[in-house]
Length: 244
Ligand code: ADP
Ligand code: MG
Image (cartoon, rainbow, N blue to C red; front, side, top):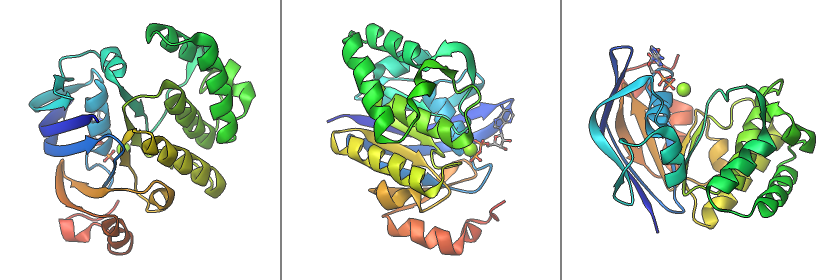
């Protein structure tokens, strides 16, 4: 049983205060959804957790089983068990997906052949075209294929915690079901998830334990899965902002 604990997290980007004291704890096997209007700071939260150098932490702490993460480089956080699926996955010409994951396997002391097989299996499970495994990372993939790609990486790398920034964007109905089911299955073997989303649809298969509303850099309200239904019909008006 592991715990990702975010306490009083504040951060700036380009000198502008975006996160203003975020508190959130995710335990192994749990799914926490973070919803909120555009510009609320959701992607900023994911970048700060992953260690993106453009963001400056100005207060608070992030720990994984008591180990400070904020003092670690992005790759050290990944090694500690954190995975980020970005809202806009980066295209990396010249780096093959399968080679990158084999390198990661070597770095983690895992059996490379087993990881190669796992990669094939995981691609099959969510209908990710196996040809893409040998192609440069994300290059020329559609939005939906990039999100499937992120899911294949997640399932192959087997982190303790995954931050999913709009993993549902760009996915058609069938792909959304495949991806959310696969991630839900991973939570049953212990993966903890922080799922940023605008839409309740993602949460039909990926069942949240808690839903949090992030507005203006703070979690303004938390509740059970029913909060996602409420937001879907009422929007974020009660939080003093219009959904833009
Ligand atoms: P969300 O994901 O909730 O839509 P973001 O975290 O992407 O919101 O953005 C929060 C605020 O931070 C926005 O006002 C956005 O313009 C600003 N912001 C994000 N990244 C940068 C950046 N690299 N430079 C300047 N401003 C940024
Ligand atoms: Mg965003």
